[in-house]
Image (cartoon, rainbow, N blue to C red):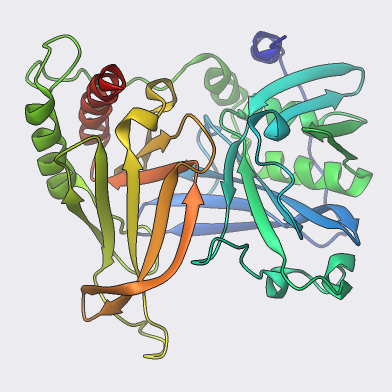
Length: 373
């Protein structure tokens, strides 16, 4: 049974003053000048530390402008990172999240899932990514893999509920773990950093969903029944013109590679080959391969981020999107360095208008591909 409607109806009157008085902060806040937005992240919270598995949880959010938030964010990102010799959460039912908050149980549905593997199909050796306190690091296991799971629809209201609880117990598949009192206090600090000075700003976030611009009628869609060939050509042109990432260390350009069938390919090419810090740091060219018929049209989500936007695409089944890192030979894609599988991908675009247009066209292309199968 789904309990999401319960969350939307609860009003939170929490007071977070003095939460971290006299304590070291476990929240990192940074302003992203290029996006004109502020990001807020918690420390990695260690929730499982056993000789057979290590898992951490991190929460992050972004709000517009610099300084204190004028309005709480609509969505909160929660990432679960699990290290183990063998995958533990690959089947869909194994990465479903349920949370017991005090004496009530909430179902947050299926998490987005990514399993990192190497070129030979085996797990990456991610032993170096573990903290020194991890018991798994001392294991004699030859190879350690990592599985990353992210909650799709946590809201500010949901996290506020967690932060206000006396007891929080999480369950992913068959894995059960509680949050410690210290970890719940870090959630309070996180919520405090995102809480606007005016209470009505928080209330508006709980009740008002993001509004997408009206999409022009000439965009290929289920309504105008544009042909498959016309739709793919339009998507290719739009991504090439409107796509790109410049929110990170180095700007990246989207270059379509193959948009002639349901099996499409595109790549992200960095504007610079090497880092300004050291020429020894070379930015890879990232290639994405996916079959449109395997994507979930209901999971396509647009989001505004500063003066840019993102388009979130998710596969129906875990790890259906292939991600390949290539050698960067002066902007030319060289041989593959690493190859992995992902359940989702974020496409960064110049505006929310472009994201909304592409969403309509992609849903139409997905439906056409599914009809061919």
